[in-house]
Length: 393
Image (tube, rainbow, N blue to C red; front, side, top):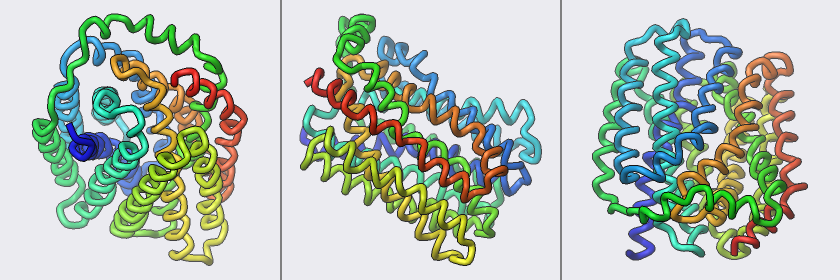
């Protein structure tokens, strides 16, 4: 199979992965804020991101049983059912039924991510991580744009319930599109040696420091994310503005950053790229803090902060995903990648849950500035991460 065809498949898969994630990250915060839900409760919605953190617990099922495309298709249908339930629920209060529907969407989305990541690692050859992750990050953002940007344009015309029905139908269409991807089976004997695969990881040089690096590297972005859309709402931006600038243009800036990041990874290698691309991403949170602290800067200030933060996020994500892909074994990619993701998202989830209370107490400017400090410890563990990578090569 040619590299071009592989990249086309990666583009489809990560558009699929980005769609429900975009609903969770971009659509739901706006929707619930519009319904009068407080910042504290919107922050509590981040507890649902434990689905992505804990997916490592059921990732062996994806490695051991079934064909990975079928897992993705089934999960998309579950997401569609959850969105239909949201469409029929009263959103002015987060009752048990609504929580159950939201949780079902998140669990299914997290499970499909396990299958998509494992399929991609099995598809992409070593040395092609840079181009693959540029396409991967860009396609993910295309899916997020469709969810958080495109869908946000619909409520004014058709209302929120019909918007969620439209999202459910889109999930069904994406499930059908998976017929374009070829089967990529994993040998049965390799599937049974999960303990050996994890033991080989544990025995590599620098494993503890590498785990701490993975935990902290993208923490600042994860902590700030839940309060970005409420910030836009509270600044008086319309749904159309949020959709066109924060979500759509912001995602395009992330795509540009991911493409640039992929070029850097290909030219300087993964170890150097982690440092060169991580520092701008860390500093970019301060752009939002400055925009929040200077309301007189108006719309241009917020627009600029969004584009800067999104571009820098794309840069760092390209390097980080390349690192995660490189250290995973193809035959055990579902479990290994899910475990790395669990480490990366654990601290992010803990930081995100109290984000509403912290933003309420510190103000948006203070909170955004605080998140800029969250990822600093990652750079102290970068040498260990490099050793762990070298031990695999």
